[in-house]
Image (tube, rainbow, N blue to C red):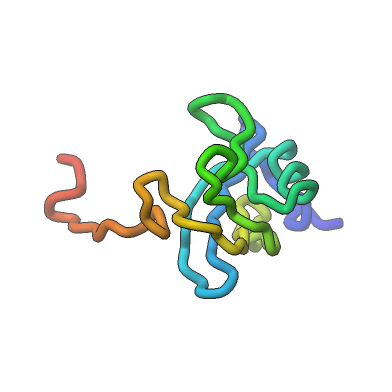
Length: 114
């Protein structure tokens, strides 16, 4: 097995995961996964992340009901990030938006001073 086939977790045992709607291809959220959250995702069928702020598993929608029904995971060419395909039940973002990526970016106002 080549090095690019084995997942490359960071120093905290995490890997970034971009979640995309399996039907529309809309990017929904960027979150972090570890070995435990990956195993939990496959076991339950609900996309599960590792919460860096709470230092615990975070099954998306466990309290809100807005789960991400798991479809697949693909790794990038360097095996250091994931593209997770899911079917959302309800909005993905905690702001009640379908995607966390609903705000336009304007470099003149959004970049911090150099």
